[in-house]
Length: 150
Image (cartoon, rainbow, N blue to C red; front, side, top):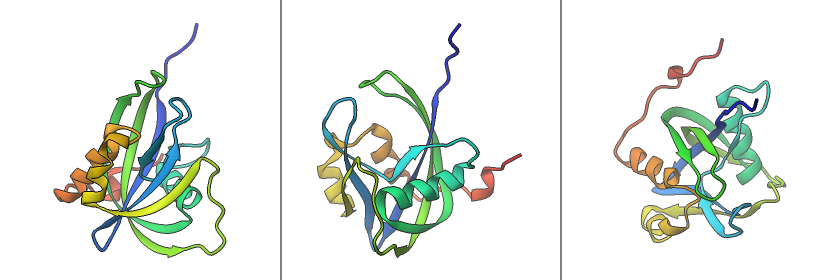
């Protein structure tokens, strides 16, 4: 008997001077170019925070410091019918890593202001991508110790 389980994912909202770090990538299921925060799947043996730091570096070439939790969302993707449980962190950029090699799925990395993101809202990977930016703009953020490991 198959057991249902959601895909556990993480993402980071990274803001600097009114601009957000976004990735442009090809959606594996639809084939379309979409925008998202740096995000990806939790790997075996990782904490959610470790996964968020790793995915951000792999997808953007930026080292960041996690500063809070914007939220946890559950989303069923219409393109593949998978359910994702996504924890989104707020982070501060620390440094761009010289010579960083990005994941092959990443087409480009952009610093976009809110209006530029709104103009691309129809091309967001999921509704969560814009929703977490809206949460950040409203000042919603929880402390990192909301998440603990046992």
